[in-house]
Image (cartoon, rainbow, N blue to C red; front, top):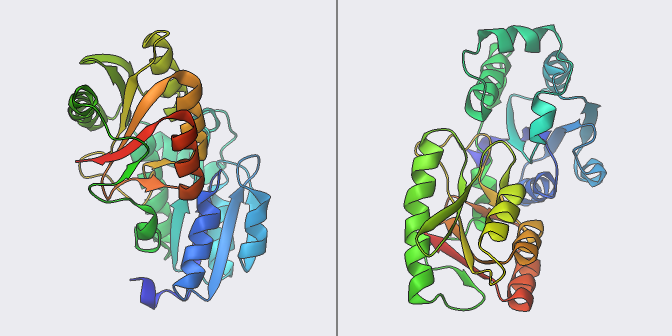
Length: 273
C-alpha cells in the first residue's frame, strides 16, 4: 500500500502526530504531501513539511474535498486530534449538514465513517496511516520506567478487561483503576481529563493505574489510540503511577521525552494485550 502512494492527502488535527506522519511518509518515499489543516487545531509547523496546505474550519467538507481533488489526491489519511467540543461547536457547510442528518448516532466512528463515504464519492479513499506509523507503536513486552508490582500487574489486567468492554460500548478507550476498583471511565471529555479525574479519586497516596486500548474491530483510518509527553505530564500531575497501552495498537509519540518523564516522575509505561 505505502509503496504505491506517490501523492498522499493529510487531514491534520492537533499536536505532533500530523508532523510525525509527514516525516515518516517522506522517509517511506511519498513524493507529494497535500494537507488540510484545521484552524485553531493544527500545528503551523506542518506547512514546512508538505507540498500544499490549506486552512479550513471544522465542518467545511466541500472545501476539503475540492482542495484534494484540485491537487490530484486519490488517497488520504486522518491524523491528530480535534477537540471534542469542536465537533459540536461549528458551522457545517451544506454537505456536512446532509451527512449529519443521515447519521442516526453521532460518535467518532459514525461521523468519521460518514466523512470517508463522502470522500469516496469524489474518488478519494481514506486509508489507514498505520503503515507509516508502525515504528511508533510499541509491541508486547515494552516497558518504560520501573517494573510493575504484582498488585499493579493485577490492576493492569483488570483495567484492560474493563477498557475493552467500555470501548465496545462506544463510550471511551481509557479507564483508571486502583486496587481492583474502577475510578474513572473516559467519556466525551477525552484522555487527559479522565486521567486527572481518576488520579484525584485515587487519593493523596496516588498509585492509580490507567489502561488505554483500541476498540474491537477498531477502524484505524481514524482515531488511532495515541499518547505522548503531555499524557505523561498529566499522569504525573494526577498521581497516576502506571500507564498501560494495548500492544501494537497504540501510538507512543515523543518516546525519548516520555522515557525521561517516566524516570523523573517514577511512572511506569507498559504494553498489555
